Length: 182
Image 1 (cartoon, rainbow, N blue to C red):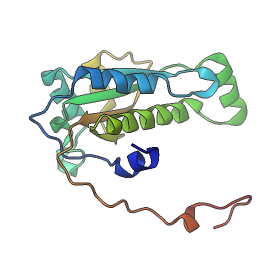
Image 2: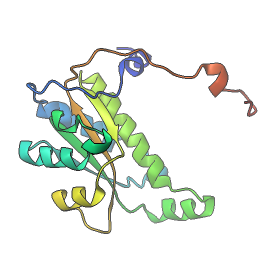
Image 3: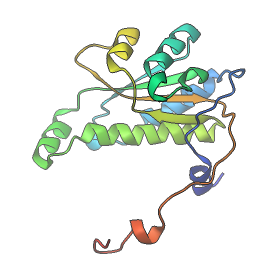
Image 4: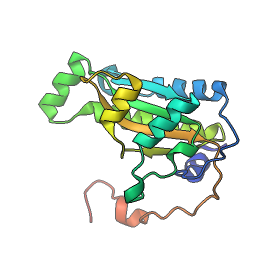
């Protein structure tokens, strides 16, 4: 598949086929894509926790939803969660981040998340990146040290929803050449 077609077909999946498990080989290829993603000064400030054990997966799904607010009510449908934990950056990335007043780890984790979702799409799977979750519950469930941050929960499974038309701003509003133009 052409890369642009892959990007056009990738969407945030919020309805999964609950009768289909994801093959371990597919998850391993997705994780490999994340592991190989670029990072500032090759810091690789990530740890990926694959949660596929049904009972634990449901508890993680509960930690990522807020039924009263209608947030992420679909999380227990997904057969796999990839929890993205921020690790410490190397000294070069850390110093560069201080000098430039940027938290490069967040950029790196965003790149890794994009690799995960695009790799999932290439494997015929749906995915959704979640930033809304109860971090303390996630840490407790997954034995994550207090010194670490849970940045994202990416759910993966076979999609059970139709492809939606992407609603994006036109290029003329989002791109300029050689100078900022609004």
